[in-house]
Amino acid sequence: MIEIPEKPSAAISNEVPASKQPPVAKDAIAVMHRFRHAGNGLGSSALQTAVLKFFALAKP
Amino acid sequence: MSHPSLEHAIAAVQQLPNIPASVRQVMVFLNDESVDIEKLEEAILLDQGLVVRILRVANSPFYGLPNQVQTVHDAIIVLGLSHLRMMVTAAMLANQKFPNLADSAPVKTLFCHSISVALCAASLGRQAKLDPNLCFLAGVLHDVGKLALMSAYSSLYDDVKKLQVDNDIFSVDAEKLVFGFDHCAIGEALCKHWMLPDAIASAIGGHHHLDERLELRQGGASMDDLSGILHLADAMSHGLNLENDETSLVPAVLDQTWIRFASTNQTLTQDLELIQRLYRQYSSMFDGH
Image (cartoon, rainbow over all chains, first blue to last red; front, side, top):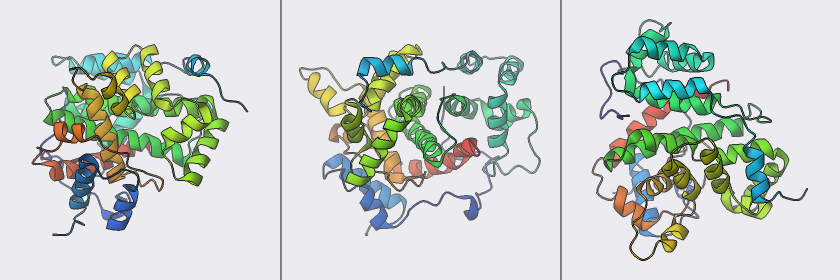
């Protein structure tokens, strides 16, 4: 059975250099723009909040 | 060019190559908890495409190993069986031969989106006590109908992409306008043709139509968990947009799926971080595709 590890194993120690990371759109406007057709239901709003929190873009 | 009927399109995509027997055999071994590592190694070595992709990921910066991994045996030791299962599933998509699909950026983006959805689905599945293997496989294959349409009807699918961008609509709606049906129906038919589990075929067929399927089930039937997870994983993936697709658009998330699979998840933010880290590792499989 696939187990997504709870935390990286000892072998997984080195962070990927920033230059090799995917250029994710991390600004709040870009995130909200992607949600423009998601509607305002609980599910969509909660997911948007979670994504913004993940990118640390949510207002306190 | 007029669009084909759904029946004609299904018949056309069923002519696409099946999943190679060598990859199927590796997956059978991987699902055996007491598998003999040497037998597994022999089975992997029969598929050179699989070998190349596994070694590429084993040598990715994610693992930070001081020495290069040069053999499949070493890769099995480094990756571990649980990572290897997901990797072989992902490689299955990467190795699949779709005629007329150039090694273009949009195709790579679609592959990477599939990996992102697979990781989200496996994470949600683990939280919901569902088999993460099944969830990962459903995620990897969730847009296989789109790949099949792009392969069998490349010119018509160019019209889909143009319509989608010009009118700022979802691809599934643009597909209905151009074809009269969408990639969900094609993906479901293809998975059935490949004799994949019914639960996967059904979840793929419904990942953009969960609300319609729920309406059909009014009267007591509960939501199919795998379909709900796939629906939510697709939305999560579009929200994260790890593949950096400028046209990425988050679909409406059914409240029922959020409440059922995510609302009580206290570690969601950490899970998203792990998904992002794993995505970097797995997406390297498609480099130079």
